[in-house]
Image 1: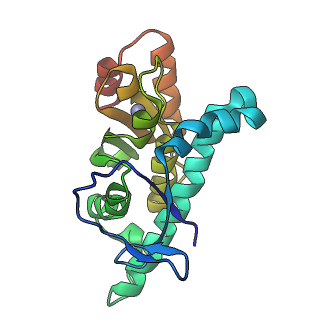
Image 2: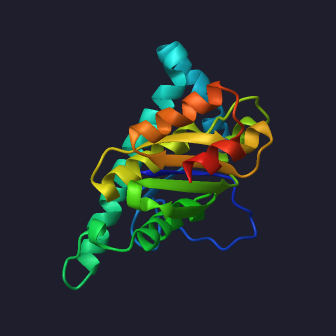
Length: 213
Ligand SMILES: [Zn+2]
């Protein structure tokens, strides 16, 4: 099972949700998911390490990494849910808000921040995600551009699995650039492309989100 990195940003006083088994080299959630604990410095150095190979495509590489991670994480979450439900119910037949909230709970526990999923546009495949306490923002600090490409990929991958249709994502505003919370638009490629077009025309995040809705 691909592991879920746990950035060490949790408060030392918060309850310890992980079970440690040093003899087997395992850190697991109460639900049995295996985790990998990494220092925040790992996230801080990730872009520069990837840049050595991908150069200008670094942000895209981070997005694609997040996408595969989100796809696999949601597939595993779905399998656990199916195994636990009496009728073996599939994830895409369940209420999307509950699925996303439950899926993200492990990420929140692991220090990846808290999310609110706005499904007001789900009928046309559009989800707006608000993210607070991004681990990437915590690691990279103040920047001029959105930096949460890993998260954008995560959300796109997870929603692609849930919707059983290719979804794309873009970070519309980022706390690293002084616009807290980070906000993402996740949806069909045409919607995400439109966000880029509006942004290049100079539209701000509030205008873009209003146009999307
Ligand atoms: Zn961000």
